[in-house]
Amino acid sequence: MSAPNKLLGSDPSGVRPRIVLYHAEGCHLCERARGVLEEASVPFEEIDITGDPELEAAYREWVPVVEIDGERAFVYYVDPAALIRKMAAQS
Image (tube, rainbow, N blue to C red; front, side, top):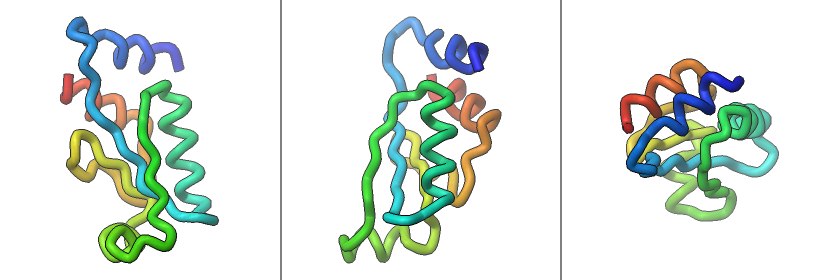
């Protein structure tokens, strides 16, 4: 996937959107979402909601959840092409 990496690295300011993956233990969809983010070579943070009552209430029904700059961008599934579009729109 060299084209996405080139696109994501094209921001001359060097500022990238903050991407957060909310996931839970044993979630196979979360593993897939992590794989898409890793394959796209985008830096991201991971937050495990397991055992945190506030996070469980906010995210359990939707995991995996990917937020870009604090806004929910994906639930259940991360579409690689849509990820690239959303990242490009943020830069």
